[in-house]
Length: 388
Image (cartoon, rainbow, N blue to C red; front, side, top):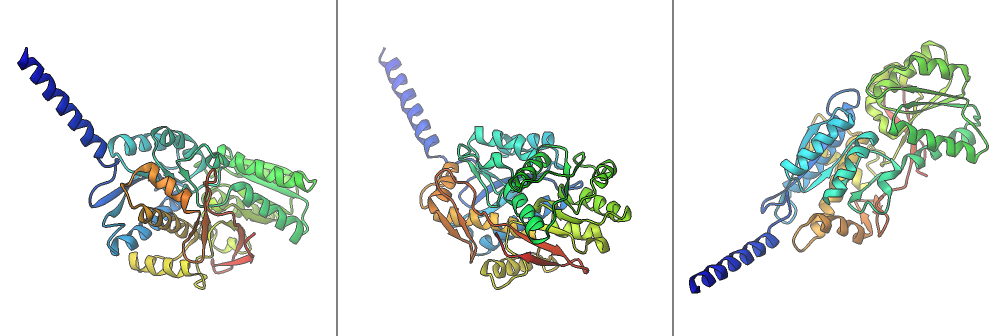
């Protein structure tokens, strides 16, 4: 009897010790010398420039921190998988990152349809979903406390478009080309809302399927509406294909693109046909070195890759990375997933170097500013008007 009681006591002691040890164990992805993040994005296919740009920007920010000794002695790493901008691939990648790789947080997702498929998985697992490259409204819901957005919404971008086209240009005949999925429909809804606010309706609508450049039927529908401007909610390859075809068809209209299009990639695809094309932006002008953040970004980018050129997508990725570095650096206790998102909310106004991100309870979006840029004859960009 005594032996049984002794064994029972030892078992209880071992169980208590194990529970205690488990409670002291670090969060998944957090090690003594490093913290590991995961990214599922398009590194191949028609949206590849966006995924690669975000990956580069985040890597630049993390290298900058790591070169300085890391965050409280820990280096930051990213495991990345290509989802080709397809929701099913993104789901598989995210499950692998969470369940197999056991990353600390997800970072730099690219796209509305992919984020719509994977954000609920991350939320259910309590994994931070940081800096997605999309302005979709569902990611701004207060109940998604694990989601951290940097950029303005697509609704804010589309409002800026219509304000400019109607007020500055005096246009009232506006058409739209949009990707026929959740991303495109969010943009469509934003445009219709902005038009209705001014007592206007779209003169035509055209669509294309995701990850294709099948835009001819959309062009035929839009041309019938005789628009003065065509606003576009899509990726750079199909949007470039549309603009080239439209110019061949002698459609004399102003073309306006959403930030997701990937500005540098669009300009490159368009070549000589790019001059005058307008793109809305949600990050500072990457060539304005009067902004300290841009100075730091350009220096860090050059250190990372001397041949790399500044751009809007890599700057956004850099800002996402810098946000993570700042927040982690403010955590003085054990680093946890919830601790990271709570810290971002608690920090309120976060100065990245002349660019302020503002968060709070129920507010997971850092910036609201939108400004318009225009492609020049040599493929460079210039601001059209100040940020709204």
